[in-house]
Length: 231
Image (cartoon, rainbow, N blue to C red; front, side):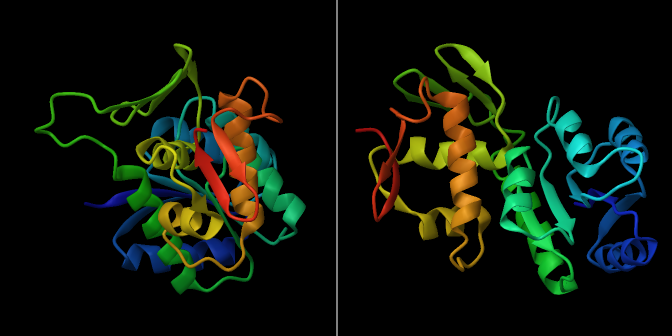
């Protein structure tokens, strides 16, 4: 099945290179060179993944990301020369799913694209499925078909990564996961001490599901080991 990728990159040489390479991987590539053009394309087309530069004219990558996150869980992979931990945390905090710094290899970028789309579609229902798959834990509810997450019956809006992390915990209640295990299972990639990525997602998830994120009752830190759901 051919997938649609929205490539938002104002450097036309980089855009042309990425577009050409991904088309060889059987992706359909929609290109935008500024944030406003990207937003218009996103509203008019079904998109399976967004490759997003941060430094864009007219509408910044961050502002574009904030706008689409109000209505969509489409995977977003940031591609940017702004590679500091602060910028990574900021981008991921606004709802990006992954981050790759320029310069990057096309092999790595392609692998990240395939992995992100695979993660985003693995929970979609098949045509033969007729009943919902619902996970419960205390006052948390997760619907794996509709991607709905509820706390005390109220809908909370999760990014795709946050949804997958919560699904992992709720499917394995009281099991402790190391950061390496979480990264391997959710990002489907080798772990190279990417603690900042894990920390940002856990913090954002807690802010959405916990009454007091600084004193979490659901996702608990097991010091020196990792995290678990439950007592």
